[in-house]
Image (cartoon, rainbow, N blue to C red):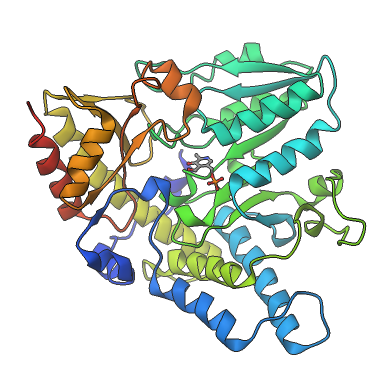
Length: 409
Ligand SMILES: Cc1ncc(COP(=O)(O)O)c(C=O)c1O
């Protein structure tokens, strides 16, 4: 049973949730959420308040410094609640790409010739290239999981042949950032663990779209980015603190050697971290609920997921009915993300025509480098991406569909 279906699904109050996001008042349909969401007032307030109250660097003897320490601790606790981890296992950093290079660099120190790393063509390049570059430098071998271009699925069966006793790490996404495909991560990580390999799950796209439980996913490392789920531009990697204790990244002699601090480089953006905590609290309160923050997050995000999926059904049915539109992928489980081209126009021209109607969508490969290559559209400008998030409503989808209808030659 998918994790989300274990929770009672409350009705999602989209209009009251929209009202908490000031930017949504500007008359644009923000269908670019897969590239980054807008932020609610509570996140803006938390960032402003951190600066206004007085903030020092961490670890000092005075109050403003204590506040920085408290902000970091609160942020780790919030991110842990969001994904079902432990605060001491939350590594914070500028973004997922930077953190993934950092983890790949540290893990690859223990790899050598004969070792193998499995990556997938479904993944965003940030969960592909760091592994290829660092593993290759260590003399290890890369093995590829392929996508079915017709469906956009990442078949699990192939992993039986890909994973073996020399596999050191399996990197896989929890959701494709262009097709929305949600592969069977739990099955893939189970095969990896049976072979003694570690798993690195890219949750950057998935986290925004429903409840997450890293234990259920079997993610030894789970990467996410707060700017995809109503927070500021901050990334996080969550792992078991006991696992982190076994890894020694490059670090300064003078910086803390404790976990997770030794994975964080230089001074943290404390005010933004206060914004991350506020974003998690926002997600937990979108739907009225009771219990711990973790429990409220599960209730709220289950409702958001059900709402997004219903809206996505309207979007896909509308696009499918247009003869001049080609939709990519038809995976069985997907986040509310559509990827399509329009006959006779480049993806950029489509995005520009929609922008003229104040409908914000992305065009291009969107860093799904291998996937757009497998789909045969990377060199022709990729496709147009509509990324729904919980604050989109029927009027956004309606505007998009009307604008795309007008593009029929
Ligand atoms: C699925 C996925 N993985 C990784 C990334 C990279 O994240 P970041 O911008 O935090 O480095 C993105 C960004 O769009 C993404 O969508």
